[in-house]
Image (cartoon, rainbow, N blue to C red; front, side):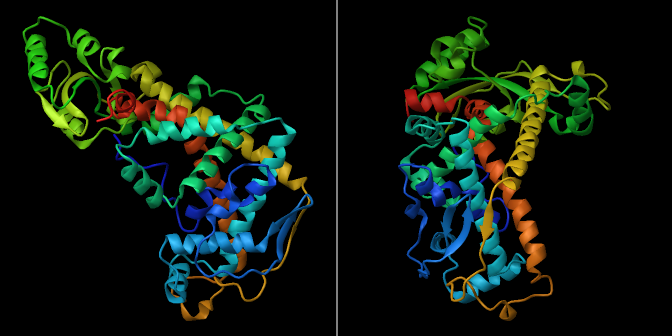
Length: 416
């Protein structure tokens, strides 16, 4: 389903800009061929020439911080002083807390670059290209892809840098996350007990996809299935143009683990296990769908055997990812504590520094100490989320590409 969001898209408050392509800001320090200036904006900026912070002897330019914030303002339509001030007040932020949050992430990126060099983690252009192409294949056209990038706050360059940073962090995680224990069956069962009801009513299905101009063949195959002349699985293997799922008899998995387009979902919702739909059209062509299974959650889950293995595996993988992220977070906190970081005061006259006394609301707060702490915690979490999404899409998009009823492979084969 090409309509699903690019990554997590907008996270929360100003963390949106932190999760999006932040590595572009310090790419000049790691030898990347991608230009850090690509994230700057035509919005008025102030070239102070000052140093915002120094990380292990490497300077972070105040102008890079300013240009990044100004780029965010332009992208969000917050270029005039009043709209910017009102936005900050709405989200209980200040220019100081924004700068602090962005600076924290610049420092993080610098440290990750250094760590990657120390541990021999190398991300090639080919790695980045492959990852981007995999994501790009989920969209029908260049316009749809570019719109998704824009809605997520990306340019092509900043998205490319986000992917590079995510792959870099994944490589680092593989190096430093040694000894991380996999969750036990008891751990998985505990989560299943708490959240198993979220999978209630999950349906598994198969589909056969025909090109939109192949109505006659689609009807003939449907008639053969209904007459018992051919099994649905054999028909999918022989006739479906979705080559990815055809080799598995058209199986696309459980709907609760995927995101199908609305036409597909509507048809599947109307079917009980064993039932086959009629012909219907969606954005990919002509479809036939069969519901193969349905799972109804019991009143209580006392054993993993009560759940389909795919749902259990999903929970297990979720816990594995959580454990890995926590271990990496602990490692990075220690790595940062051992680094030499000198932060300098915010200069006067920066273009995003507005008088917040004009924009305060009853719910807003000007406590920089609280804001800086919140922003730092939030930005760290969101950077990890962004990394998961951009670099570990092999996990989430393994079902994600299949969640498009295997349309990713169809796009490469028939590109509707």
